[in-house]
Image 1: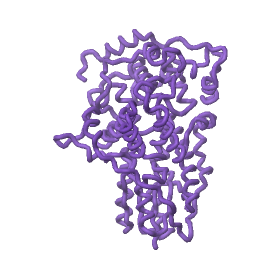
Image 2: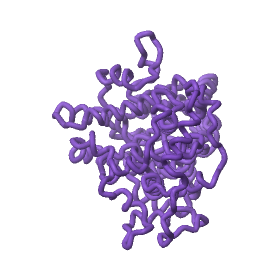
Image 3: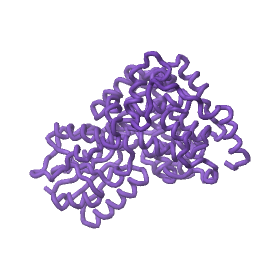
Length: 469
């Protein structure tokens, strides 16, 4: 009756959890453990803060099944070895992750525990399609999304696994850290309270969010998802990031909606496939997370220093309402509309000629739905240095984009207080969330533009001229 250790990572759910079900199916006590390890500790303030809230919710879920979530802090291998020694566990199971840091950690853990005589097994679940199973006709990996989508859209996705109704508990539980002692909220400072009001945490909440989206918004998803001033997206990126819902559950909900003739359902499934594509690329070309995917861009003269323009970009004070509204939305909610992400990334890398790595790192610090693969692919798409990227000569105009996708100015009013006689709470909350040393007030005048849009465009095009991309 040696217990099995279930190593909890980005899979904070009961349903469609292959590793957990394998552990339960062994008929021995199951010890779930979450480790604040070297990979988690290296992440930004907002994702670690949000992860902590998700861990707390999952601990309560396990408690409802008569189980516990053991919390430990330290290097993953050392913690797992200690738990094996303390509990006499004969096996360790987990669900796979695919970013380079997680893969390196997991490979080392698997090899070492196997050498120790411990049975180790990992399972799929963070993705619908294991990256090595999607191949071109010549056996390579896909570098362009459209043929990738054509390949996977007709594939069978396994039906989600049912949640276990009980977890066998050990006679004696190992000691656990207290989540509060980790102080995962602390790096967020006063922003934690503001962002927390907008989070949707836990498996039950994620399932409700999916159901509500399918019932009320999926029909308009094709067009509404591009309009930042309306609630047109699913909002599920937050929950998918921490595995509070599986992509397979979302996919099958989309497929059922398609079968019912719901107009935006296929586009919803296509967006899930974009997430898969990001991990497909990250698995096959791990350099995408921290280096130019197209090596020809290594010599491009991006700025890499923290200029005043970059500081104003970070503050949401560029003088471009679309850019500033999107950045302020991020500080208040911890997320940003996808159209906004495209605009702020294009503006930083092209109008301000600043390296995408600066923006990528800032998003990792500020986004509660930060995802290592999607963040990297998104920034390189905007910058032009990635696979299947926006062409380098495509430079979004924030002014015309806002006029097109927010013609009534609702998005601007939601997030920019300056100049409004009676700004909404969303816009005022920005001043409660940002660092105090920024010393900003809603009574300030809205700033002038950092750069003339036409001049910024011409400067970028001149830098691109005669380069072999």
